[in-house]
Amino acid sequence: MKLKSLQTLILLLAVFIGVSARNDSDPKIRYIEKYSSVAVDEMVRSGIPASITLAQGLLESAAGQSTLAVKGNNHFGIKCHNWKGKSMKHDDDRRNECFRVYDSAEQSFRDHSDFIRFRDRYKPLFETPIEDYKAWAYGLKKAGYATDPAYPEKLIKLIEDYDLTRFDKITAKQAEEIPEAPFKIEEPVKYEKSGEFRFSLSRQIYSVNGVPFVYSVEGETYSSIARSFRLFDKEILKFNDLKAPETLIPGTKVFIHAKKKQATKGMDIFVVDEDGITLRDIAQRYGVRLDAIIKLNGLSLDYVPAEGDVLKMRKTR
Image (tube, rainbow, N blue to C red):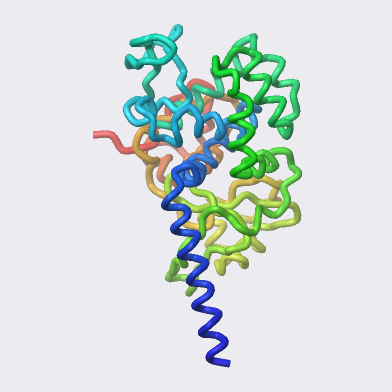
């Protein structure tokens, strides 16, 4: 029995090492791990499939390694046009063309969504179902997004090679269990209050601001998610800034670790872009504790965000 257990342990270690080596050697997988949650958030906000956004980012930025991405946080090759912000010169179709420069990669993703969302030539795309990634790929080419005649096929290949459509299913409310062989295997993490805290290997783990979370699926509750990650109910509620459990809608972001006291670098402020959004919504979006946002901005407990309000997400000197 002991020999069999040892053999099993050795086999599991070999699998983990193999997956880890694959992750380290493929920049595309690392890119997907890093920006999938941003693409999903943008899909919810704008209606552009996360698979399309990720494929475009992978292609346009060479998986985050292009000059525009490294020096200008420009992941989609968007040129200046009527841009009033920072810019840089780069050779593209012509020499020394003007390209937009962003403070963060997340800002680039958001601008990419708005670039497509608010231009008339892309309007027909938003009549296309989110799950029809091929129609979206060909529609972008038809609308003039890229000059490369093989652009749609390149997007489609990336989507299919890396199973990017799994991210589209989250908002379609058809959320099924995330694939059992996720790209990223998290190492076990010890959690003092609940003993051993282990990431489940049967579902995809995402992260924002370095804080791990999962998307809920049909039939789940905060309590069931807590059990699957060996957490107490009160812990998972605290991680998600809740005093009492709420009904989970499929596709809800559920943090499985304590959020941070401030946002990641480059995400210094948040401009409220819609009425009806709550401070907790913002906290969940950025992976920042609700009480930290209140303290950073000197807010009262009855504060209600209004469109146009500017909130600090990081400490400033």
